Length: 340
Ligand code: ASP
Image 1 (cartoon, rainbow, N blue to C red):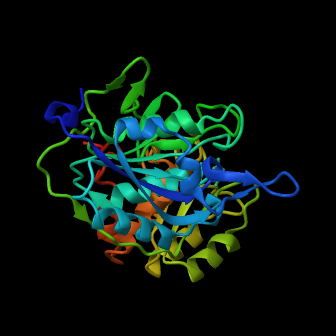
Image 2 (cartoon, rainbow, N blue to C red):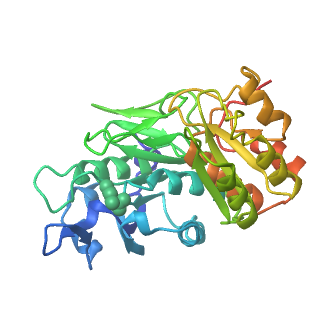
């Protein structure tokens, strides 16, 4: 039984549409395009009204490939301005960049006392076999539940916003929870894990700090140091997706001198792993140790997407390398396991 059912009040949910496959229609050549009237499509799901009084607002209407960090600010502001008016919030979003937005909302909206749920679909609501209907219904169910954090609801999983990753362009279970068990599962009923944050009298905080000028790239065999040199000259921070435990080439085309030079000019270099599961362990190999010695900051078990968004958020607050280093390795919203 939800908190509102116990109180005998019909819950109120704000559904924010942003575009994405869930509300897309086919264009003249069969390509999926944003639909003019996303609210009309949502209105075709009468079950939603059985669960809650739903208001619909649009913050964008694009393929999520076209979303930029200012959208995260607009979206989080739209939610925070109405935070006391609703039981919970649902954001309908394209799946391609959904986990970046989920991470951003997690850092921008902290100490939540109610759920902010993001969902989407692999198949548009208008088409046969769409997962959009079920995902939206489940998202609203979780939005009126006792959960109180930013979470992705997709398929049968409820995933902490900072731990979600799009794993499949095909499966209906498109997202997984990386380096942590899911916050919950959806089956005959909804079950939450012990570590899910539940509703309380916390006072939500809006922490809208964002420096968009961050670059991210993987290392790859043959990568030229000049690539990093260029990024360091044009960005305020760099995320490098290292190999395995955070390993960086140190041979003929060593990246170590350009990493050291970037840090010396005040551009932090954060190293995450390009593996999906696991944490950086940069002391393990000489090739990781060299980058650590040059001043690189390990991302530990954060996903690349969360590492990038967090670096933008941290750089929106400070340019001091030592402070950036300690903030990147501190857990704010369940994004990493701190090393004790
Ligand atoms: N390209 C789409 C988007 O991210 C994919 C989707 O929604 O599934 O907007």
